[in-house]
Length: 299
Ligand code: UTP
Image (cartoon, rainbow, N blue to C red; front, side, top):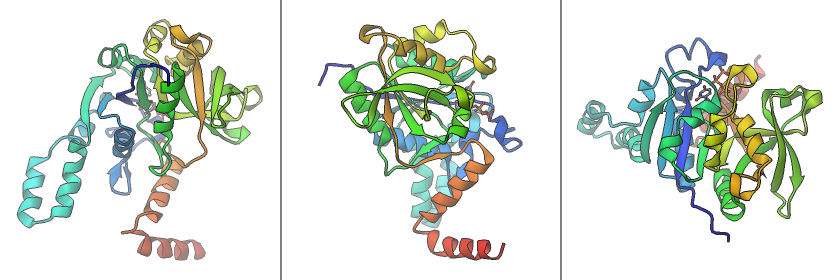
């Protein structure tokens, strides 16, 4: 295996405005909306930890308090549960604070995902890092991030996660032009375009919210003007890296993901996600699934 720097840090951008989920996101970050009984962002931190990344930097915005509180101790609550002898809930309450070493940086204004990533520059330093979007969930049974880190370790540069979507949906995502490599699930990314109209998309392979990024991205982001939606786009910076060679932050590879991904950032996908998670929960499914079937049968 080539001698590339190890990936040890994760960055979780969670400073977006979440306008698609208003009014719920007026005072609560969308990353804190519950998927059954845990906020979405907790699943994301658990995923980083299970890929071996124990140093997690959250990029937060105006409504950061609930995120910090969730990943902190809650002494009063713990005392009450302790007094009641409710060990199960006690460990659920303690769990988020014990998961990883968490750090926070604030993105003063939501100037785009690229700008949020740039806010991580000082903490990350000159090392490759993983970036996990706080509203995008990957099923814990499908080990995408570990595979992406492996690809970075073997090939250097940056690695994005790609998922095939129907043509009419490509305009919702960043989209990649790709070439095959000698590995079935790895492609070379030759171009990237953010939210293209369906007829201009270079492929059906959409960028989903997991990245392993070379630190050269910071210098590129500093020189990336605002793009689509007047935001500094991470896709634009990765496009620049995709055109570069090995010692300048490139190349960019894509891992083709065929597993289960759940979007929680808009109302309809959020509802789908909650139902799927509930139907998978051994403590809820035996009552929830028959109820759901009956409910639907009577619609
Ligand atoms: P989205 O593209 O979903 O944008 O961000 P958004 O602003 O959060 O939501 P809508 O479109 O208004 O509904 C993708 C990820 O990047 C983060 C978001 O928190 C989300 O995890 N992000 C986005 C930032 O941290 N800062 C930004 O300026 C923009």
